[in-house]
Image 1 (tube, one colour):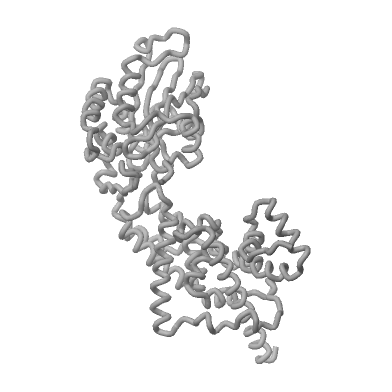
Image 2 (cartoon, one colour):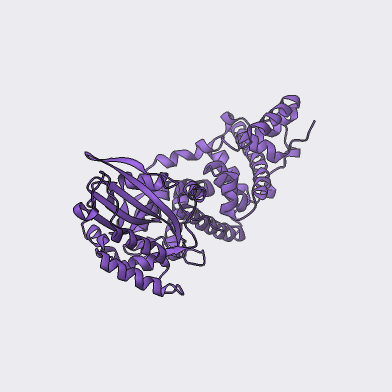
Length: 176
Length: 293
């Protein structure tokens, strides 16, 4: 059925919310991003090419809005820099185990990545796009997606490792 | 031992490798414990992340977002799939007035299909097709002047939310799934009949269109349906009934008039040649959209 455009947009909102939740690490801020995406998308709906995927187009808008926001916040010094994360060489070799991961650890770690890596990880690992779909979404070759994604995930792993350590030392400091 | 790259390990962790390569990587991991540690990075950051975020999918979407959609949606505008002869698709927005419109003329449909009068050299073909359509009696009018819902022809035709006729039921199924011009036996209530996707072509506007014939003991319909989003939009439909159809051996042949009208219509719309069965299969695999580039 040629559905009304509103219905089509609404049908994509759950996935868009998950994507925005992954990027922002916060439900309300995620929904703010989704709301901005809706307004931006519908105000320029004629730029969407029917026959192409509306969801991909909206994800791209959300992604660009996120870049704009993050850049602004980075300028204001509100965004942690990836350089703050210890690299793998300096880690104590303890492996992060899934059972120790919490949402806070994951989202704080994701927030430490540069925004392009956040987007890539969110698209593939959380939204479930294939490498090929992500390549088409980002307009880069699949080989580039794979090498960037591998680097992003290694950086994320280090961040998770750092965050879990910070979490356990915090607990220790509190006497637990 | 062959080196295993991070990308390979990642693709292995994500289950994205071909079985042969997956087996090779698995063997390499078994032989080299350091690979297990590198693999762990990708396991943890792959399937390990989703559970933290998937819960939101089951939550109701907040009302403020739904409201934002309704507030900012171009007031009841309908976006129609429409390609240009150049290959790039453009959005065609119809106003709220158009949406409520129940009478779509052959000219409207022709414009939709061909990208409008801008198409050079198509003018004459338009004119003759319209003339023929007028002479042949335009049944799409009857179909679409009905209220929303199922139109005549049992569940074989319906209208979309913009009031345009679309294929439904077994007709939609045959158009969607059958290639190669084969007759497909269908049962229309008590009447046995058949639907034949006669031929497939690309319209001047870049839409995939299929000429079809529905034959039943007492009625034969010829028509053309063009892909519009997920629908098969009926752009021509000529029904031939009873004596005029010249019932002979049960399944009647379409009247010459109806057939030639539909064929003239096809000639007015077609860009290039009628497609072969292989090309039909490729299009079917692509959701009946013309692959871009």
